[in-house]
Image 1 (cartoon, chains in turn orange, yellow):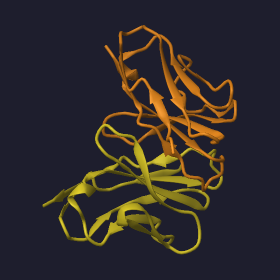
Image 2: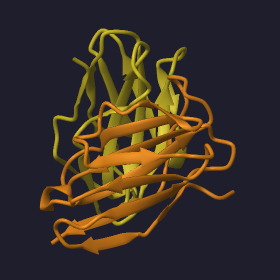
Image 3: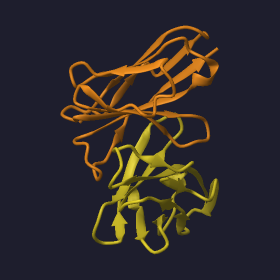
Image 4: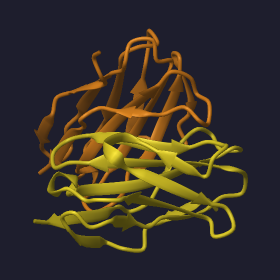
Length: 115
Length: 114
């Protein structure tokens, strides 16, 4: 079956620009997560959606970062006024339910480079 | 605070030999433990998880992991390594009183030499 997909796979932008990263979760998965992974590190939690609502956005680094999931399926991570420090791989994951034991399935990631 | 430690940045093993990738954790509640593998330029792939029950968990590609509550460890093992097992391995934990996010280790690079 289809897994989690993310677009674009790579994004190069200039400092100060706005970017949108898209995640299409596994069909039927109600929980969706965004993580950020810097080189040589494990993923860092950004935000978690249950359905259409952001149940936990405590990992967003600042107010330049925002994410939506208007219909409870596809999610978009939006970054305003990008900075060089935002360069990383942005990972999306989904799970059937938001319970502790549920496995999160990851997409291939979007590699963001801010010049 | 919850945390995961993978004490080895890199593990080198000869093909055919057993391998172990170490993971220790610190959580306030009962832990749910996960192992993922990441191949170059690819996403994280789920290998196995411990939720409850038998301390020895079997997963994909012949991997297994042993949950040890007294040592707060969840080491990944495989009896006979393959060159194709070479990749980056991540341990992650979620506590029962968590907000569903996974807390991750920094990863261990596994190199299997022919």
